[in-house]
Image 1 (spheres, helix red, strand yellow):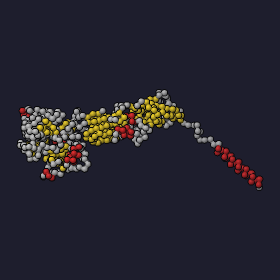
Image 2 (cartoon, helix red, strand yellow):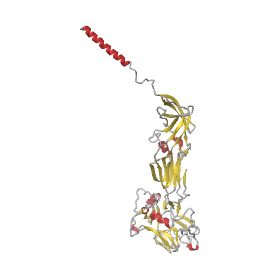
Image 3 (spheres, helix red, strand yellow):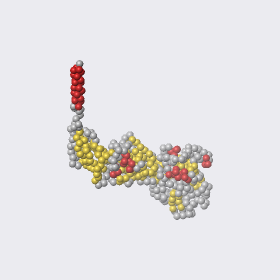
Image 4 (cartoon, helix red, strand yellow):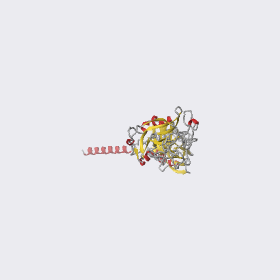
Length: 490
């Protein structure tokens, strides 16, 4: 019995020993030396194109910042993309990147034929090595460079001795300085538009179409030509900072105040404020009114065409005696005595501005500004300043019931947003009237009368009427936007 027990114990030991030996000698599934890639050193010199220095104080080379990397890839040949950091610099425009590249088993880098792609990445939410395909407003050009750049060189050829490439920026940065015009930017399905009043910055993909309504700008931002565009336009001296449409695709700037003249020395100027008047209601040819005889006072009412060169603001203008030339449309064609860039609106342009342009009825209303009655006209692209309000539709019997009133400070906010104010007051013979009219360029030959813009501040109705050419009527000058609109694209 004891011998049988010993035999069984010996067999059990043999089985355990055999099992242990088999486990220790098992052949691994993947030998440690059986890798499917080879590692070779890789170095590349990278520059930037275009290398146009700095734009508005922002150095283009800021695209290369601490922590930036370049990703070298070719999924057919490389085992994985090579991520390399800059190791040294050449001058101020080129950078040397070095590292080790993993080549798939059976593949090789062949000088002169292997194609690779290089993309600059800086790890931000947007600049992650993918093309920028949006239209984005940015706080500054520096922010745009940091977040929305896309520097790449696709399908460059590997050179075993010295691979050297230039990265091309396909994101375009647009620096826009405008006075209140609408900017529309479109790229594929991406669309962005807003009214620009000041200095704004945008990041857009190469090929984005940029239009500026009212200024006739239609430009394609081409990153192959340059990475930075500056689009700027100046408000002409003496004008309100906003555009008003006075016809189909015709826009004007209005002067900051009514035209004024001093008979004593023949000086012209604009009223210091839009609500400024040279007289008070009920005045006759007394001390508060600058008469036509050369006293040291200013006047802001003129007989028809008297503010043009060849006219005389102290005398009646006789159109029939050819003192003033008319064009084929019976509009005055002479140059303005204040300056050749200035003119007044024609009858049709006044009608278009007040009654026919888009949302015209919501862009004009009677108001009292600093206790002066008149007409407020809003520009095409209008944003009401915070804290202000007004009624554009109303009818009242008495001037005191007009619902819109602005203090000097409130009007300053309206004016800074581009609002136009036309104070009332015309002179008929020897007295002033609160009738509301402004001169136009148009002459009614059949009635031998000047055509003026008229507006009723009680009923909110606007049109044109004929007045004697000897009636004293206010003048508001404009500059027409055209080829000399002072817009630049650089």
